[in-house]
Length: 245
Image 1 (cartoon, rainbow, N blue to C red):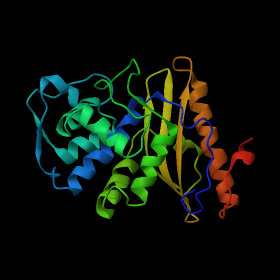
Image 2 (cartoon, rainbow, N blue to C red):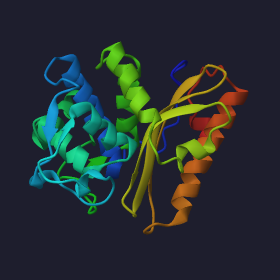
Image 3 (cartoon, rainbow, N blue to C red):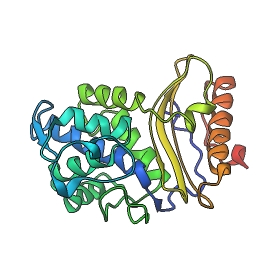
Image 4 (cartoon, rainbow, N blue to C red):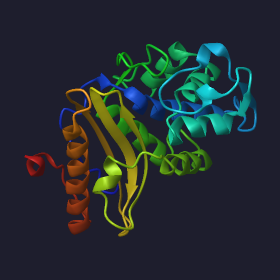
């Protein structure tokens, strides 16, 4: 709860395979470099052979050597979870080691990039707490300018996959989020705005038997439970440990 700082923490510090939720901190690093003048939104990025990846996204089907603006590339990374776009952004930001150092500086202790996307083996890691914390830092304007924060949230509101946290929200709510799915791990993290004016962060990662539908159901039910509670109790001034039990 971004108003009261009340929260639920159920094994939130546990590292999980990040899947495409790793794209959230990468997005923040990109816009931090925009703020610092290291990247321009209209600069051209070249899609080279070494960044092309299968799985999510349509850039993989384009001709090698095609150029995209950095804004178009980072938007595809989030909105359609394009893995080729992600690898292009990682490369433009200086590579995985540079990004991992930045993640550590932000206090993201479980968030590590070890391999390019799609990383179906799940070697890249994060935790629900890390994802929630980076979204909180962005919301507060701690690591991005207000202009970049607003642009980040607008991009994340366009995420095409709407089958996890969004399914638990009520009418009139909006969510800026990013999902992840590698079969054995399913996740979603985002910033939710309620019609009553409340804003909160939700971050859920679930381990499951490969593609087990119960993972999706669980995330939806968690989302619905929290939304319903905050709708009925808009002023929350305590931590939720007792309530979640």
